[in-house]
Image 1 (cartoon, one colour):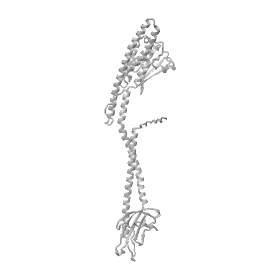
Image 2 (cartoon, one colour):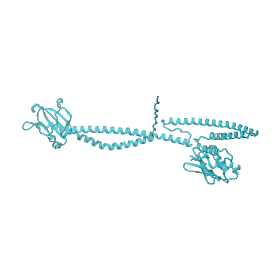
Image 3 (cartoon, rainbow, N blue to C red):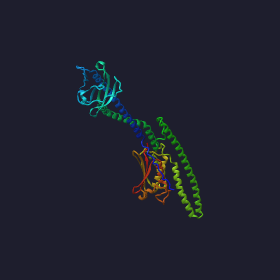
Image 4 (cartoon, rainbow, N blue to C red):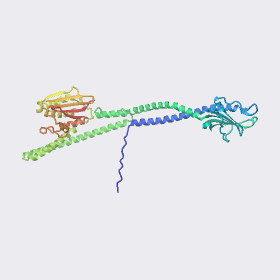
Length: 461
């Protein structure tokens, strides 16, 4: 039995809400304009037909009024309608008068030799009716028809009078109206599109504010979304603030648990180190060295986790004076064996502010400057600068530096620049952790001589 092939559903991209709203508004406006154009055209056509009806009715009345017995007593059209188009062949305006049932047929010169179809027999007399007729040359005519009973003095007969116009003229008038209407509808459509875009932009502005607030929280300029949003967006802002509160509590709890665990392990490691010393005094140096090696490795992990657990959340509104912190760290390191022999140069502008907790900056600079003191020969230089986007703090020494091939390995946990010297090999890794926690990074480069390590943080404020 073969397994049925698995059908994977690919999630569609949500797309742009602005584009959806504008598209919906545009389609609805287009539909409304098309309906409006159709209605206006129909109304105009009816207006034209009404006007044509009134004109044809005048001609029809003139035709019937001008029909009667001639000088010889025979029935004829004595006074035909006066419109000159009736005298021009195939002009598009026609009249015809038929004496029922088999009497003569009188027609306008414009019909030439064409005869209009007789009316249906069931139509009532004295009633003006609208008719669609076949005209000369295959044209379609729109006309009015009226059946009139003649008095006994005129033979007691019935006559059918028709006045018609080429329907193409009505259609042409409607098309001319539509051609004039279309540019205005296009202009209205453009105005409606611009209005829809403005309406959507104004309507989505609270979401842009919400996005800006979230960016401020991420960059550390704000801690909460706050209020001041429309009632449709306010619940979302409140939920985000509630989520931030819950996340903050969870982070504090997790940091406390990590710190407690690290402290507990540190105590156990101290006991383990004491036991290793006892073994060494008993002459079991090999076992003692192995235990101490494992203890030191575990100690490095504990120290790193303690530092990471202590880091303040990067969303707080923290700032630190770089020059002041650098001077404080220099004052401590200058009293050490390595630091006392060095020339400490601090080239940091007074008042330069970095977006980081003072304690975290002191931890980072302490590791960088301690590393420079242990490897520098005569000088350690601390520099800082700021541009539109970042704050760069660089600590450099005039020591041997690091082989270019190993620059990328230095930031790894436990990697030491000098395996023969003191230290756990965690200094630069801890600095990298601090930089990452505050949205920054660490960069290394050889200066020949010496190594320069830059702590790059976002610009404050």
